[in-house]
Length: 173
Length: 167
Image (cartoon, rainbow over all chains, first blue to last red; front, side):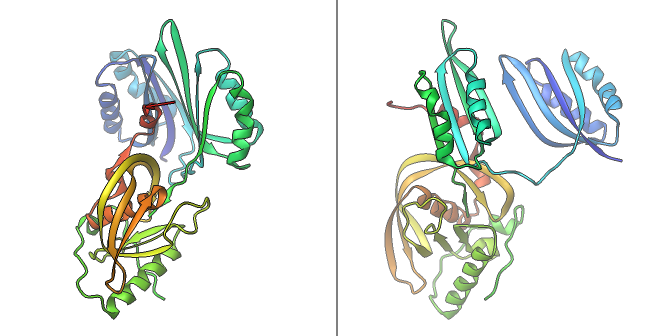
């Protein structure tokens, strides 16, 4: 019986990793679902939904030669593959601050306290070695409304955090 | 009342350019009524274009008067043979489409447009539009050229790095 897995792969980035993984998976008869590949701090990272009748251990074993060739670390988890159930984000939040530990915890706790559901979070460290700064972009659903999000994050503004909260009004036509 | 079938991508008819309306007759008015019934029957859509129901005709309907958050708008508009006369600014915004279910994405559109279009009777009007309504019109006019918002989606990551010219 075919099952869904989340395949996680990390390693030093180089050209051709996605092509090799995708080709190997196709050769196994696996089908791919949604995926997110990002380069984080120079590392290749991907999380990829894979649909196959192999069990998790067999899938890992079949991918082992490719991951050894490319010096990648690979991990497989069984998941439920719920496709065609996208949740639309309603609010976008941007946070910029001089880099310091604790920013993500403070922002995400303030949001969790009002029941905000984070659908996507991207963070980046920009600037320079001697003057790094941090960028957070969050999209999600705010059951308590846009004003509640702005109010929950307002206390951070006083501490030198630059904040933007805006509605995502999806135009359907 | 007739609710028409909405074509879904990758139906090739969505890729065909539409032809200008020449006869402003009863048949056109009946079709516009059906198009409006179809727009209202589905998920909340502020616009619909004739090719989305399989008619390659330069007719769109846009109504931004009932959005959750009020936006500048010209009410319920039937736009026949619409032409964008002028463009200004550009802004990213999220779009979805009746013909592309379960997918939304960020699209760059002109912030303000000057639009010329005929109404259902053939009278020509001009509109100065901005923001959400201007976005809806650009999305619908794309349908008349065989374009979908899928052709214009940019990465979610790209708008993080929008350069601000001033603070």
